[in-house]
Amino acid sequence: MAAHACTDPKHHVHDGPAFVAAVERACRDRGLRLTPIRAHVLGLIADAGQPLKAYDLLDRVRGGDGPGAAGPPTVYRALDFLLANGFIHKLQSVNAFVACHHPSTAQHSVPFLICDACHAAVELEDSKIVAALDERARALGFRPRAQTLEVHGTCADCAAGTSASG
Image (tube, rainbow, N blue to C red; front, top):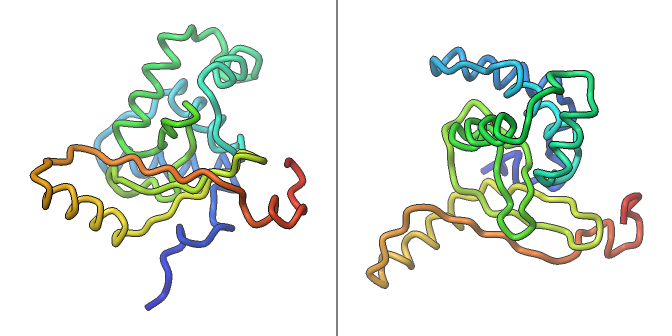
């Protein structure tokens, strides 16, 4: 059985404009509207190359060449839309946002590996991990509503001393 692309640490969003275009297609397919500010926020997150905190995102919105007059409420509404529709993920432990690797699917739970040295985040699309957590919770009489699994440590590049940003 071939590994899903998201289990490959090298698989991540490389091309912000192509990612935004994929989300635009997904929005059309689902009857959603990707407004200019939503697309701009999404593009900034996709281009960041690592998790992006809300304050950094606000600074980029204000300082960039896109819809820059947007205040915090507008940006937070854009983030809410992108999160609710599974186009981005929020990393709770570092309070930052990353683009979802596969925007054409509905919102889903995924574990993340987060490097404490270079701040890279790897999305692992591993249904066995998600199912095991759900099954174990239910066996204990718990009814899970959502999952957030974030594993912190050191990525292979940083451990080998080869990371350009670490």
